[in-house]
Every structure is written in structure tokens, then in C-alpha cells.
Image (cartoon, rainbow, N blue to C red; front, side, top):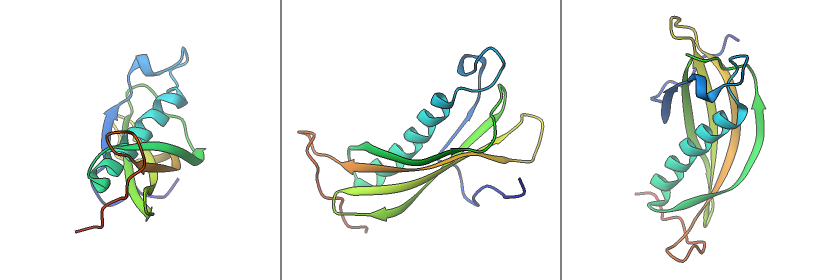
Length: 128
């Protein structure tokens, strides 16, 4: 793949470890989805200035495998803000520990809803 990662700092960066993989050394898809949800959640909480919960994940695509030892960088970008919801596009990129070339491994769109102390939807504050 000739694409390059986004030109900004990742929301999350981790190293894939043996506990995150199956017996063949391939990383579990659920582990990667969890990282993506966490990155989107951090972004949603920051933008909503409080608690936000995942309500949907759309268009999950796995492009390439992640292996034990790969450095995984997850990028999250807000693509739409509604009255109580935030849509966030998330991409994951992997790089082997000795290489410089990154490859896009997954992407999906996550939707979050801002909630109050009683876990009811609340308005997303306007940007300042």
C-alpha cells in the first residue's frame, strides 16, 4: 500500500504484544477494534467536554494483518457533530519494529452520544 499515515500525532500508539494475538502470531481483530473505540472515545470525550458513549460502528474494514511486535498508531478525526452525537473516522496504521514503512490496517466510523450524569443524551457544546 502506497498511502501514508495522517500528518498529525496519533490519538493512541501501542506495541502489539503476544497476549493480543492468536497461536499464529496474528493480532485479534477485537483487540484492534478496542483500540479504535478507545481512540474515538478519547476524541469524543474531549470534544463533548464530558462523558460520551459508543452507539455505532460503521464500515469496519481490515486491510492488512497486524503482527506481534508491530507498532500500531490509531488516528481519530471528527467528521460530523450533531446535537447530541459525534461521528469520528478512525484509521489504524502498523509498522514493524525495525521498519519505517507504515501500512493502513483498519478503518471505521464510530458514532458517540454525549451523556449526562444520569446517562441521558445531552447537547454537545459548541466549539470555542
